[in-house]
Length: 219
Image (cartoon, rainbow, N blue to C red; front, top):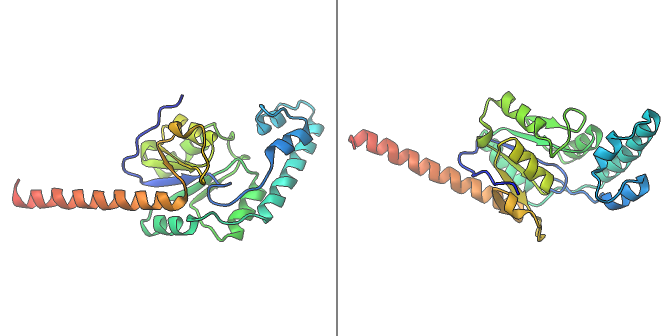
């Protein structure tokens, strides 16, 4: 069990990509079966453990081919554009950390004309649930991890955020998921997160005005 980290002031947002910002129809159970990977084994870990270099490269190539094909058919998730627009207006930095290969990640991002301060694929850091990429982004942004929200749709996203000491937002896409209690907050769609962030910003501005008013009146 992972204890959710409370959300306070959010000064940066990191996103998962597939089925968080853009759709993915990649059937991982089928792909595991095709590659001889058991259903309870992480696919990327399975590939990394193949000792024969030639065989490993062949398997990696097949996976990348499926990822790129999936990227070409992707659509943007509901509420994505309005959420990114709001974060841009608020000058809140954004990043993507994905288990995708760089080719598929960039194809999806460029196809939907999405813009981020940083994009990290599995070639740069160990893939989620490892927190390495999230920690590196926090250092680059010079922000405390507890002030960076990680947004995703899967348990690996919640685990990576927890290991990085960041609050997490789980996007369920209307599904009844078994790991919701591991998230700091849960929304059905990205639009729900936009609403929460707007409400937080309003409450913070109200508190700021109250403190300034008290200071000016000498109370």
